[in-house]
Length: 274
Image (cartoon, rainbow, N blue to C red; front, side):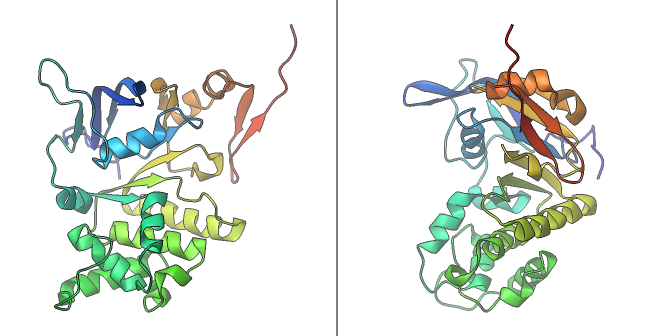
């Protein structure tokens, strides 16, 4: 999928400022992420990545502008019903996994079906519509997890659970995915499998917005990087222009370089004494 210059931006922040504990977690951040552009929001712990996610998912709200203009717009709109939002932008976060583990006996298929009403699981009562069941099973198949449909979510391995959450995010056929460190905590095999799925989704036209500090999650399809530092944008541009030693070292506070290729990684370097 290529960028459509005539389409509204997928996510747009206009001088967005969020206070946490009386201090700015995001400090006058302006960003424009077009539809069709696979982007990584990158930076060390405490740089504002989690706040960015909570801003988009409406768990946090920015400070109001004095002139009334919106600080956050998604697909050109600033007012969203959560259920409608998640039908356009699929979201995968570790917080959702933790919430689901608190529901003992919850089945995998019910986890995916919960997406249609923006619930952790569908309500008890009438069976779900046949169309929902069909879409849920198709989403599980899309992420190589259809064989897990009859399992309990709490019995899954970390890699299996991550694929089920991805299926849930895809159930409504969204145009984009917002991914919070999707491969964190996975072993090398499970991580490779998940990243292959993400690469396939990117090639199928699903826009990826990846929020991470893990270099190995920077699949080749992600060509644009936003580098955060201290709640502000340090750099915003093509991958090869942002992932350079000077900018990475400033962001992470230590000499650092990025090695691209089949297994991307960050490599710390010893500082050279003057």
